[in-house]
Image (cartoon, rainbow, N blue to C red; front, side, top):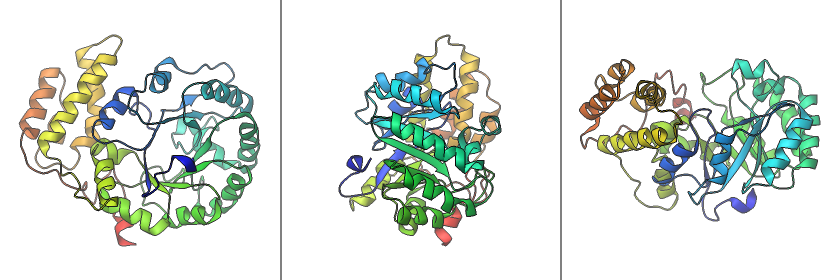
Length: 343
């Protein structure tokens, strides 16, 4: 992964988020500056699995000009090795293993963050995959399952297998997304690992991003929910790295983003049902509308039809008022981001 890093600034990466970071979302984000590379939604891997065709399109139809890593999730070493070889034959920048997903349904299957309960299993799995993967092999992890005190042992395992990059979401699995991150854990990884380390979690604007880099020395930032809320965040950070003035989007810019995402997703929907599409968009709008002044968030929760959707968006967003830099400090969707600014 080191050869993908920009020569003069930290790397910027879009986090993989299930049911969000598909091909349409990648297109929309890329048009607003976008990251240095993408990571696909995870491919669920088990003995009978085949790579999901829709997720494969994020690789084979990626026309953004940005590299894309294929991410896998699972616990069966043989199946993961088989799938990794299949994915490595495609135009991917590398293969990424998900050791961070905290979803209970995933962890109950000892996949994602659930694997962190068993460091020996992680060790065996990485040994198998490192031998099987012919290209870049990276890992995305949490700092432990129940406690960040588990992280030093995990780092020694990661270090021993010659992975090409490590992304650290600096919360435990049990933390979900409800606590501040632990930048000291990312710093520990930077000091321990011979490969580049990317920091993830709680980057909601340029101030939190720059603070995270300053506190950790990470080679880059991976941004997830913050990029749903503000798709210009990559351009803004890139401008600061290059001592330029960051873009300052308005509500009308946000309206254009929402409408474009609506259209891109609609175009990719095999059987378009207007009311169902509105419900799908509302899941994304929960992050976009959160913290904006007025009743936008309240009204959007009650939208049912496309007419409702566009009327509400237009009435609240069709103006040139600058967007707020950050969500509310007491946000339930972006918990604890103020901790980065207080360190």
